[in-house]
Image (cartoon, rainbow, N blue to C red; front, side, top):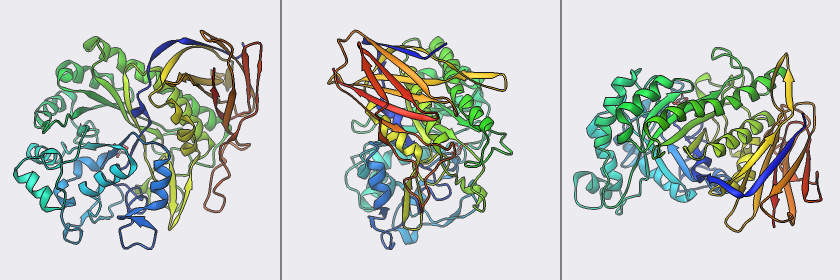
Length: 494
Ligand code: AHR
């Protein structure tokens, strides 16, 4: 077989919700502290305590939504610890992540300020596992109520007159695991109970997200949709790509060809996982009112040698770039159901956008994919037929290429192409139907010669996007030739 793509440019399959390009920042390792928040008195240049370099890099990505404060941390977090004068906030232990001291200097006001600085919408995960209904009710009132009430008055006393807008609220996190080890039947009732007190004040409309399943746990989705589907706006889903086992996940940078292949194979499983949960959701919600919110996804490897195992700090290579591009392609294909996705996690944790060391910062290959792919945010997904060669190893095979195409409001078409093969280039003829001849074409490529190529503080641009010249336009067919292990975004103007 050979590669071939046909794009039916006059047939759209829906809108790619820009929230698919969202992020997740937890009180975990050096994500919030050091990675984002350094405090106003830090020698690291900052704006109101948020480091300037990271802020500028993240702003460039047009982050639609930022999820916080966890993760597992969410069901251990008591929001009242994180308001008021910082020096008076209680110090506590971060039980889940490394047992380190959490000084609560980054709390509700700081997070919502960060969202305003980024131009991102906040998505707060509430505490069901160890918090009370009243605590959750009060938090929403504190943030969003304009009138006179104990919580709104407390917010004003703490320096914020106007309420914030709070578009997204999660009722717990992984309540099947770190969030309370609950059965779906039990959590479903708790969801209905807690969720009833997540109120809409003063025109603020909260999109309520129920804790959803981990990867293949369709039983959880079945119970949640059957018992609570009509009470929720979104249902979450978590899936991590772990090349090895949970006990030995594999190194982020020192891996074999086989591990490369398995990583791609596992990344592609996201398609099947979404399809399984969507099938159940379709049965209870054929109108697709409830969104599937993949609010944790990405690669998970062994931590970098010598770092705190509870900090989940890992390097990020070209392999991660291809996991990102192909996963975003999958989200596009499921844009009728997937309404948001939040890669884990923004800075210094798991499949991060940026890594920091003291006052230095580097952009990761994953960052570059998010930057290249942001042209798809909010665009119309185009119908496409994809015929792919196979990429084979040890008697197993996956498609050699992944692809997606979308059209912006002004008619510009963007095509994302990924070549998974670690040895073979991919020649991909792209044919267009429904438009005349493609006019001007340009492209950007992220490619490296080594599978484990990555950026370091000494070589921050070892992996960086470049202008892509490897295409030809002849008789209306655009043929792109991708080197092994590369991601390309083509821009086609009529
Ligand atoms: O992202 C790291 C952790 O993974 C989160 O805290 C938890 O929700 C998941 O298990």
